[in-house]
Image (cartoon, rainbow, N blue to C red; front, side, top):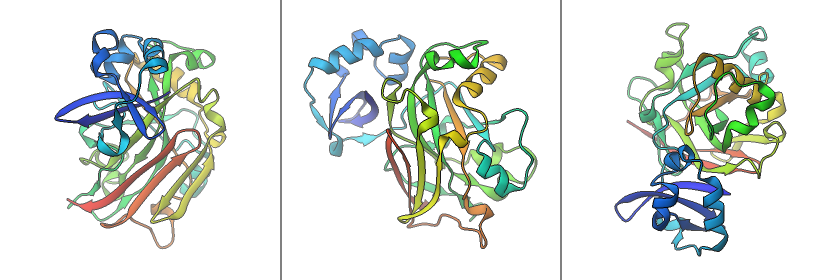
Length: 282
């Protein structure tokens, strides 16, 4: 299934994407919850699949405003330097452990919304990434058991304000300017993506491919990352893990390539879809 969070008619809702339409789950909120986050917390994916099998779509995708896949995640955990190609372009050594930083909820935008270049910097960079959405509480999980704790996957653009990221060894400032991280367009459940290491990730800036890699280039797999996270924190349904970007980011090009107002950036992942955002100034 493809599950979308959206705004329509003055309310926020969620539903199942069927071609270019949506099965609106608002009439079934008593059974599945009022939001995708709540549905995951209730373990309602099976009930949603049953509803989608018989209910008719009532909304057109073109008529709704997309929301970030999980508009209100409890945690957004991001892995840095997790593709071998990205390690090589940075000149770093291969890491022994995954490097983590966090994002705040208000740093996110949805598919179709503008990513904002902050007035504090012109060094706004793109980072196409695979997002993992947790569907079942995970604590001290082994890597081989991790897939059972995943609800699904989405595209992410971890927009980075590079100079602020590099003020110190801590990445947090450069990763949390409001409306710099794009999350969408929807969640694709794990039954459609049985092996997240066999996907192709492509980032395009104004139609030109700037990043492309297979997810088997990840240094720490989805299972590895979940196992590591679940050791230092409890992962709960609706939490989001951003798994890292591949080589080709703007900061390591010569000359550097920054996103500017008027640009369009796309992150496409095979089996998931295309996350598309324009760029505008704060």
